[in-house]
Length: 283
Ligand code: C2E
Ligand code: MG
Ligand code: MG
Ligand code: MG
Image (cartoon, rainbow, N blue to C red; front, side):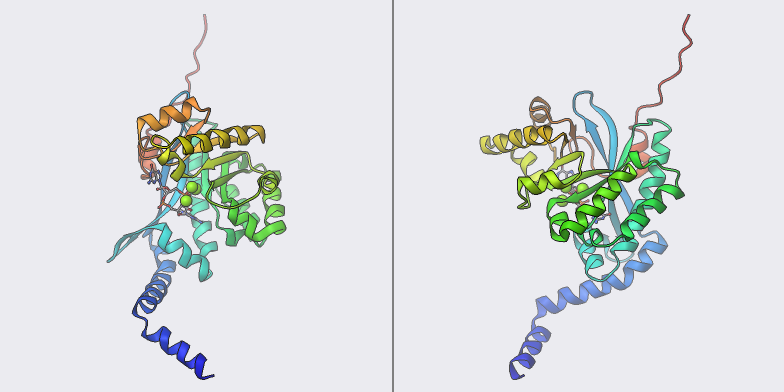
């Protein structure tokens, strides 16, 4: 009992832990309001088909412009939302925004796809199915134009339940993508069991490509593995023209990165989508 009390004292007097905890709690208090008052918004980063250099899709990335603290990155507030039961509300907001802009993009390119990141926490219950259905229906956005990004570790943590939910989403026509590939510790057997059509190579590999022969070997074999499993490959974190060139040469189909475009507001993305093909009367 004495030890437990001491433990509590330690926590209270540890300035770092206390500060972090307070920071998390104050963020949490404001997160609900931020969603309602527009301080939470969604940036989009284009996905480019490397062979044609065409923008064929975009990834939704949550942003928070705090009234007094300025911009707060998702790496800070997603975790807080996950731990304190706000991730569903946040994801519903992002899904809805994504479906709305996606429907707009489809008027210019019917094949345009929007990607949304899904936390592992959401792969434990059926609520995700309803959230997706609701966002698609409310915006008349087809399931086939939505891509949900899950990390390999995320699906692994929730095991069979996650796989069953992912299969149900796939059966609805939604596409699935394995995000940050290469940073987790999944087995090949496990990789095979995720019903994904796309594999995203983590940015740490793209960023090391130019300087490291080992990373080139890892990326090349990952591309071949993904293709053998019937998936297309997206490289994230393309920061130079040289990296883009290398990935294209290696057979990677799609790229994302600062060299192509930083995450930005939707209006800017819309100007990058090729205009609809004109119907030309022949003869
Ligand atoms: P992610 O899904 O792997 O997204 C890619 C991250 O890399 C983004 O960071 C993006 O801005 C950044 N990035 C893109 N191109 C480059 C590049 O060329 N170089 C470098 N160094 N970075 C690049 P961001 O926006 O800070 O998001 C971080 C993570 O937060 C995301 O990683 C994703 O896991 C999570 N996240 C963002 N929005 C949401 C959301 O709505 N829901 C959930 N559950 N997670 C989200
Ligand atoms: Mg992602
Ligand atoms: Mg990623
Ligand atoms: Mg990431």
